[in-house]
Image (cartoon, rainbow, N blue to C red; front, top):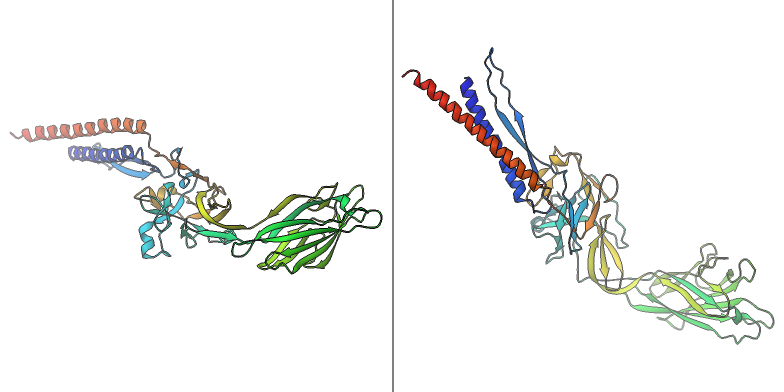
Length: 433
């Protein structure tokens, strides 16, 4: 029985070391595979109780585990949508072939890195057929509220590179200095004119003609101007008329002291805003609060549009797409405008090593890995997302080669045990001869 158990232990040793060599060979073969997480093989002794003084060899058992929580170093690339996770967390992806079956019922897989590019349908996909998942943004670029412990809200990120987009103007600021000498007795009373461009609902460029007419008194200085606004879509209609009175006191000289609304939306002295109606809808115009010099002023003898700003933009073509550290996917257009179109969360699990390993360096959550949670990248326990980067393999070739030498010696030793047991059995057989 003891000799037989020695033979079984030797065979178990051969099997265990063969398993370890298989994991070593896999690690070395994938030493240049982006995102590969090495496999570790551990041995466990098997103990069988013996009778009396006779010891019965139980042998050894090999167990393997993929060390998903051990990441590799990052290397830079030239592709903006080459993504890698720096720190804790995984990118949510799905198999591209699943989208052709049921786009609304794809299985979420996890990976730590990927080289994504748009395919023929615009999906951000890797060469191995993994499509990046994210939450679509609202038209204003905000991300709606989504469930964080389920993947129902995640959708395949689809980029329409031929997309045209525009945004109407809803707010503008008139930072204009009016000449103080224009309201002094004897001034010529010349009106100052200004055209401010805005974009309509269809991305068409229009303008608001703003005219400042001074009130010239018989004596002294009035410090008063009449501002009229006319929309270029209907030049015969005044959309707003306001009487602006400026302060000439020492502490507040040149700032607005009063605004009288003749027509158009009422002026708010606290915010400095007024609203006018153009053909496409209301536009909020900032002319400055009472006593503040942040917009309209009346100083010196120069008419100067010092700061004219507005939101909205004309129609433009999408040129580039990038992902920032917080997972927001930004589309940049040839008009210079950038819009947020998706957000990619990072997935965190209690036990990453318990996930199920799948091809192409992807993993599926399991009972052993625990329940996942979708975090904003850079928030909570997560790291951030790095563009223009890939994660290298976590394999240390020098360590694997050293382990291979040890495994080879152990395998040879177990083979020697089997050879020795065979010789002992042969001697036992020869006793009866």
